[in-house]
Length: 173
Image (cartoon, rainbow, N blue to C red):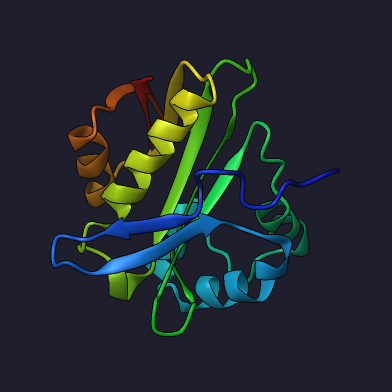
């Protein structure tokens, strides 16, 4: 698989309400150690909310899939701590089975939550998915993940369905 590195327009930064500016770029294959450190730095609750199961480690197959992204149809962006270059957030989308829509996932490190990073990153994912030609962006969110459900609602996602303890939200692009 040929993986393009940092397509035009993806490198940049996000500005937070407090004036802080955090670097943003696409994930790369050599980011595997950073992604492992990010994963292990998450609380058990944050890991469960992201993966919807208890994981103590990222399986090698997931690590490979998460860092080797075919950026023709999928995208994974990372937000970096300007002080040390570690990940503070990871957001991604990938096509759904129909190919006309995409599904997103988003995780912000516990220490960086409630600073507007998730909002800025999800806004960026929506914009890039629209530019990539997707008709809608979907998300699966645990029904007790109030923060993510509130964020999705603020960004125009509506609840489409329930699947057990998961709510499926969608935003037309």
